[in-house]
Each structure stands twice: as structure tokens, then as C-alpha cells.
Image 1 (cartoon, rainbow, N blue to C red):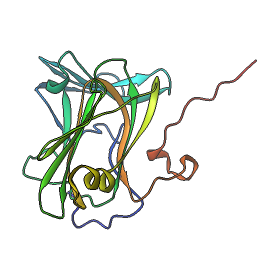
Image 2: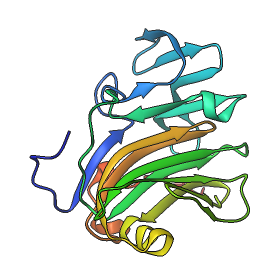
Image 3: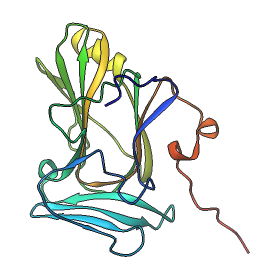
Length: 209
């Protein structure tokens, strides 16, 4: 998708307020039918396993992407849509602004290293220890209450798990249960105040009487 794109700064692959369908580049798992334009910015994907839809979050007072389902692995989204395509993102940091829904949650980043091997990093809040296989690394992730900014150092994790060098990211998958504001890559970790609006989380200002 981005092989011929000049990659520097931040590169977004999901922003909840981008257009009428922010998941245009994403495939929805287990999709049965998609309903668009429910009311204003709302849309939804209803399946037998769970729902992927737009909801207005009460904490940030903005529309976000919600992924909810009883079976974590059966409800989610994947970018890019086509299994034969690749993101081809070379930026080293993967960042997700995600809300803790106090339920099981999982995400996956697939990369290629300098040995031309595909490596998958699968992070979940129901795992307590890291386990490294030949091509899959299972790892725990801890989310605070409410909204979180998750940073994933791709070169560091690839070196630590496999002793090889990160080359590029092939695919990203996000599974139930969570709410997403944005998903992006960046060349370094930026201070919140230096980020453009698309890459930061705005919390409503509390006005005291």
C-alpha cells in the first residue's frame, strides 16, 4: 500500500473521523452485512460473532471505531483488505490510541525481517508471559482504565525475539474488544503537543462552576 510513499513523521492507517467509512482500507472479519449512514456519522458491520461499528464515545465526545464480540479471534479488522497486498511500512514505531473496554482484547502486527522471514507479534491482555516461536511471538499488553496510547517498538521487538533486523510491516490486525481512535506508524515517539490532531487524543475540557 505504501511501498512507493515517502515515509517520514507519522503515517496513519486508521482515523475514526476520516470520511464516512474510516475502515475503507480494512477488511472486517466474519462480516455478514454492512450498514452505512445509520444516523449522521454512524455505520456498522453486523456478523454472527460480533460487531464492528461507529459509536460516540462519552469520554472524548467523538465518534470512534468499536470492535466487540464474545469470541476475540473471530471479531476484528485487518489492514490491508487484500491478503496478497502488504502495507510495506518501514517506519519503526506502531502506535494505537485504544480504549480499555474491560474485556479480552488482542492485536497483531506482522513484519518482515532482514532474513526475509515473516514474523507475527500477537499482544493480548489475557496473556501473562511472552512466548517466542519460530515465526510467532505471543506477548502480554496491559491497558490502563479508559483511553490508552499503545507504543510498539518494532525493531526492538524483532531484535529481542529473533535476533534479526526489522525491515517493514506487512499487516496489522485488531481484534475485539476495544474502541479505536487512531492507528498509525511514526519514525520516533513524539510529544503529545507536537502531534497533528489526527494522531492525538482530545479529551473534553472540564469546566468547573
